Image (tube, rainbow, N blue to C red; front, top):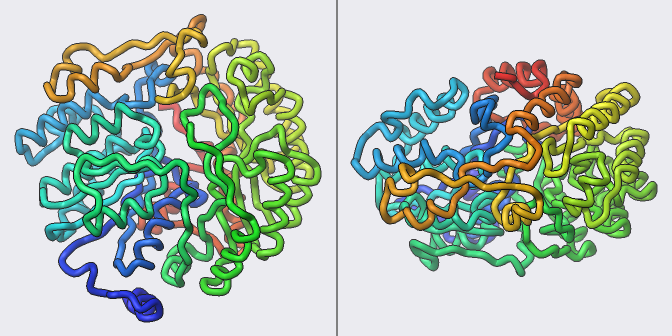
Length: 527
């Protein structure tokens, strides 16, 4: 509070705006090596602080080894996959039952219960005056848990405002409707959450609103010492929003908008002098949308003088000059969406508007040869993929592992069908068939019948059994048990630059135990 009051005094801000209410931002994330994925809540928090509000962030980081049964793992639609839990929970809430999970207690794993118990504990300890505002950053994995948290808050005090935003809320129209009609949330934010959160707090947005400003570039606030102390020298930022590519599996349809890099440089230098940050997590979807743009970003980072940074890029634009720029500007790693290593699949998916397997392989080699870590994303089970394709992908990965060791990191996931993606909108073109929920769920709550009838339960792909994709992924992962250790190396590099962020559960001992287990198991558990 002392730092807040000092900041308020410096900016001549009224420090009585918080009187009589709680303002809290909540992020629930699966996985431990976060690489500052909570950047949205960090930036919104700072924005609200700069406008005179005392804001708390409550971050939940947990390992969730098994979300679905093995037979369903490769075939769920990333929309309301937890509907069999949602419906009983909503009924319990509407019937004023203290236990919202009554009747579905056996549906959760030990790891899932940990997050639920922590939510219960946090809500019990929290004083919630009228007019308090809670903002949730939501993904498809955390949507159920965020909704549970929201309903627990409403049970304690119905006179509050709840806002949800983030990936899932931005691209899932059915989920937005479900959340608003069911009364779980008051306002849904589809994009930048800074101004909408302020508008809710100050009464300019009311119940039932959906806010989207996709054409507007978010303005990033100045960072105070308050956040730097908490994040150990890392700040989140970005140089662009959206992505110019139209990959068929991607749900993001946000227009690609770039920042003026000269203004961005001035902003970062000014912020660095004020806060003393040493590292940056650039949350761009595609930092090298063009080769020229990627090189310009590296040159800017070099002039700003950061000691470590990480971002996301596209393999087809990994030019030697860009790689040189990564190295010279102290990039720790870059995430590359290789996905398949198969030209046939790339063409069907319109991957990066023409990416080839040779470009993907060459990109990884160039990055690793430079000494920068290549964090490679693979999507297993894409439409058009065969067992032979997967065997070829395994051989390529084995080559990278043997040659580059822990400079090559792997993030292999099973293909998930996202709302708003081209595959979701035109499934027949990709050999995909949607199966919808049965009447027992659709008709369970009358006012939700219309929206629930539009939500698919699962999907199947021509020529692929539901279990195939999961088995392929597990085979790929089993060959590389040190994936978590590679990410650990990346965090260590941040730490060497005085910018180590290791706040996952808030319990240091528990964090270390989880992180050790996470690394030893290669970031997955077969059960």
